[in-house]
Amino acid sequence: MDIGFLGQYVVNGLMLGMMYSLVAVGFTLFFGVLDIIKFSHGDVLMVGAFAGLTTFFGLEAIGIESAWIQLVTIVVVSCVLTGILGSMIGKYLVLPLKSAPALNTLLITLMAGTVLRECIRLFFPDGSNPKPFPSLLPSESYSWGNFTLRLDSLMLLIFGTLVIVAISLLINKTKLGLAIRAVAQDGETAKIMGINFTLVVIVTFAIGSGVAAIAGIMNGLYYNEINFDMGLLLGVIGFSAAIVGGLGNIYGAILGGFLFAGLQTFGAVALPFASAYKDVFAFAVIIMIMAWRPTGLIAERTSERV
Amino acid sequence: MAIDGQLEVRDIYTAYDKADVLEGISLNVVPGKITCLLGSNGAGKSTIIRSILGLTPPRAGSISFGDKDLTGLATHKIIATGIACIPEGRKLFPKLSVEENLHLGAYQETSKDVVRQRIEQVFEIFPRLHDRRLQLAGTMSGGEQAMVSIGRGLMGAPKLLLIDEPSLGLSPLFVKETFKIINKINEQGITVFLVEQNVHQTLAIAHYGYVLSKGQVVAEGESAVLAENSEVREAYFG
Image 1 (cartoon, chains in turn purple, blue):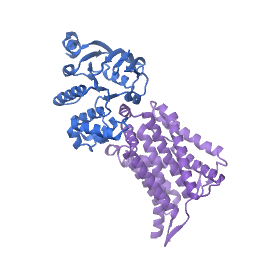
Image 2 (cartoon, chains in turn cyan, purple):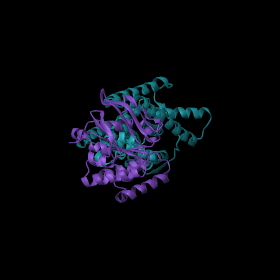
Image 3 (cartoon, helix red, strand yellow):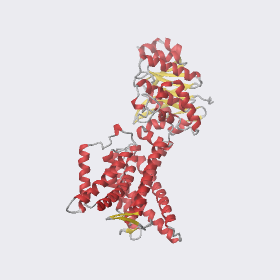
Image 4 (tube, chains in turn purple, cyan):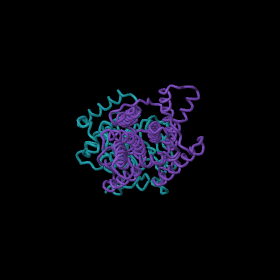
């Protein structure tokens, strides 16, 4: 195997890992504060990507051409809209079911995800076909032998790292983060401390969903294409990453995201027949890891939840 | 007439699911005093605390603190009226540090300087916590956890402190120490509502007491009188 090709795969794997981690962090945050699985998360991500695309059309229409202004506006608008969507799901679909069995929450968010997906497919112009996503990042690239590093990939990786660092700081260093961790450990005692439980839950849903929107936009910028059902696989992968890392643990989610991407990439490189089986390979290994460590790689009792 | 700083519980009925646990409880917690609530296991003592805090809101009756009606308020709004609680079993956040636990006690205080001052005050009362401020609360001994829990209850500078079974699971020596501290807290002007099973030591520091049995108040009075009440002693405390 040529070292240049290998480098290419590493960059690609890191990029995928970044997106998966950002999705998995949402799953782990929601589970942390409410002990629930929100299955609409992948579709919320998809809505984030489409919100970004719509913002792009809007900016083009009013004549704003600067790629940087477009990019910043797309990210901000998409994060805010998706954050609002996520907090509405939290407030109107998840919180009212707090005393119902967890299975009901799972079902209702699964249905909500289907509604979102079908709405985009039916109401977005030509929504059932893949939509080209604009390349807003510089297209320069640097080559060393067979290894080509695209500047846009590098920028996405740096941006993704910054988002992960920012979430970690938010959770560990701010008063809001302290409240989120308190609610995650013991919601009732958190209330006795004077924490507005409902507000913290809703804000957590907004944060997780905003981060998913970032993953959705990264996905669009990297592949230059988005699709109404892109959230399905990303959601399942993000969920698996969160579980395999140890649900409820942010670092576990990040680890799980990169692990899954690493497996996919390894599957694509190492399997002689076809890289088409990379997902099969990755999920099979995840199943084996789950059988070996049922509570995840970073088990909850040894690490801090959220 | 509302008395400033007085907690008034008026004829509350509180139920889990359908079965009433509290059947028409009325009591007053007089400002500046220690009022205690005695009763055996399952009498409904903790349910009264849960009702006051809005965790299990009463289905009938009313609760007020000073001129504020607490009935039906969300817990964080009840805390905002100047009430704090040292819950049964301490209920620390096990995976947060001592300092983070203390910070949470003053969650509604917006001034960082005030929070820092209060943490220093807690460290003055419990110097051992200063050395352990970065330790995870879940890894500490029972006695140390009790200190954190008491400290956390003081962090919000409450007007009224609800204390639920502070002696539970502590060594006799530390129980004595705890009651001394509760007395000291009260001497600093904080009203205390103390829920306990430990009759003798509780009546020794309380001014007024209620006795609860099967969801109803069966006796009340000055603690000296309650301590002499032979019926109460025989019926509930052996």
